[in-house]
Length: 421
Image (cartoon, rainbow, N blue to C red; front, side):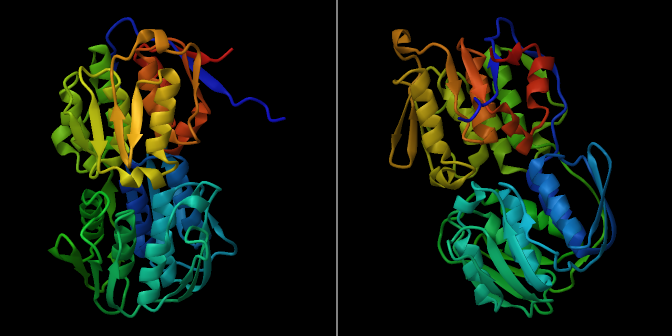
């Protein structure tokens, strides 16, 4: 019989949370610029970087492909590259790092030889067929028999350009992966959407900004097509902004406790889409009746847990893609809220409905939140524990995927957290 999962017990706060915290660097930006630095000839210094499971998997994969990646301190990478990725000796194991898997699947087309890109059991359930289909359209020998990783790519050492359509309704990361690869083609590459919907359009802008910083030329025809000129990348020094998704937990903790938490970074300076959650959080406890999560998907677990304490019910729409994240986040949120009190939440199609102020007599005692090995479920339900007694978080170490210091950050603000038992 397996030993019980470790857990952390969190006591409700009795005073406003106040203090200054240092946010981790953006996961989204860190994994983009790590890859771009690996594709650029010369030495790139990346500062303000996130050091977490996801980014360390990316760094290790680049090392397997003969890119030298140094870590001189806790928030920096120094990348030395010939500008060419080489075939690794074995498969690239990337855990459950969606950005790393998708970006390296496309970049592996530039390798002369065979690359197998995969991850853990959770990653083996995350769809990648649209990206594989797009690569095959460009003449790349790529296959993923299950429609999910692992993906096998037989690269020829380059890309000859062309035009490709891609269905990005499940993830904008498919488009970002193609864009970053395309700059290393010998001829222009035109990428266009095959449908009107795209997951989190703002991340495309994040990708293009990073590409341009490394010397690439990208022209946007409209919101649904892009042309990338050949020319590759030039090594550069790049400062990575803090992680906006991580910031949402601190903004929420501040609002829920009536506190004052300084994250040391102006809201208007964020370029990541999840920063849009700030304005919603500022409206608490009068959050909108309907919240569209399509363009700030990773912020939805934070906002959904906040909605448990809102003045009125909230319906979350545009969140279909949450079902194919690290876990089915919509179901996970609803299920764990219902375990606390059956009246807190309901799934309706792909929407999530949250109903605050249920009958307190129905509130369960000693609820251990199942996190599904999903960092965002763990971090968001820690917010519920700030208000509701006897909540603990199972498998708290899963926050290492993007915010390894999360529990210490809450403790530094005055939250009492201790091992269960």
